Length: 219
Picture 1 (cartoon, rainbow, N blue to C red):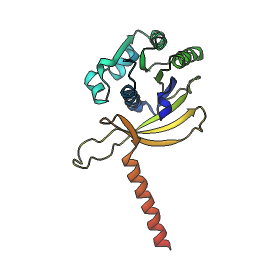
Picture 2: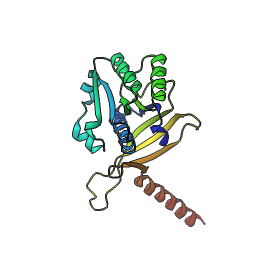
Picture 3: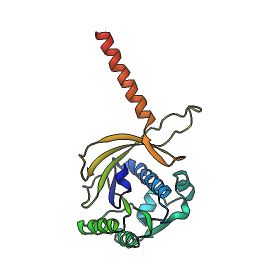
Picture 4: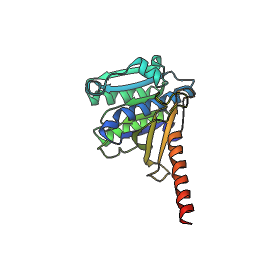
């Protein structure tokens, strides 16, 4: 998880078409955490196309606040097409003024992926790119993650209230680490930190109890 805040290109891929909003929410949570830790930069660049805005909606201030991100930090670029959005993303990374950059666009050529990767590394800026769930991993990325939405845990004082957001993360690429690792995490909007999901821990504990129970019965 900590590698997601390193300067460079990070790919976030929905597990399925319907997981696109979950992937975006996860990316915003990563940026909210990064914004709480960086003092010498004060902008988050978010590039998207008009087509994406029609399909998934436009950035919404109260929604950003709910994600832990101050809307005043967001510099939103609504581009005509993906080529224009990629150009704006690269130029923003070159400015060295960004806390982080975010885009939900298709990078059409390996050359553009490498240009974005080099710009992000040179400026020491994490660039989170939400890609299509069907596409192959982009070249030049430091990490590549597959994201799936998971049911949030329960709140002790109100069983009907929504709990903290949960995601299942599967590491598909990371320099120096073996791919295929999977975990379920949740995000606290109070502390702006990720942690292993309490719901996942409960399920693991229940599974452990079931194994011990079966052993006791068979023994």
